[in-house]
Image (tube, rainbow, N blue to C red; front, side, top):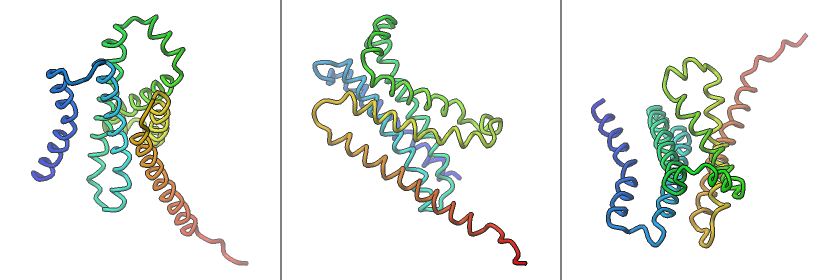
Length: 206
């Protein structure tokens, strides 16, 4: 148990490294000519990366048979939510100073923001329903709700691609990763469906 706790704490520490790194760059004025934009983009990038890591837990759990990985899936999902919230806060407060008229105009003129809002609302719903109490109250609906993480990842990917200019190497890598993760889940679903059909009792011949 002590070893598991140490590993869990190490993962938490690793999740905070990008935040510390960003803080150092802010202190040293290493964010470039447009620091607010750089801050906004880097927080969004890390939200996306941790979302991908969250999605990778289920395939890893299936391959390793280590059920304890479910705890890390929840942790990484909450970290993705944290960075997505920081990304949103920088956009609303630092970039736009809570000037809601400008924010509304920006949203209306920038369709890619709609997908970002959709992704964030889903991740927010998943975060507030992550405690065991919420899981107990939602029952079977809990799993249905948490499968919407794939919809969130798709919306986040569109949000990311739509605003990009220049080098597409990193976003193409993200797209390939999400396609692999989704493909894995589809294969597992098809396999389970076939297995369930085989286990159905056959009617007796008259």
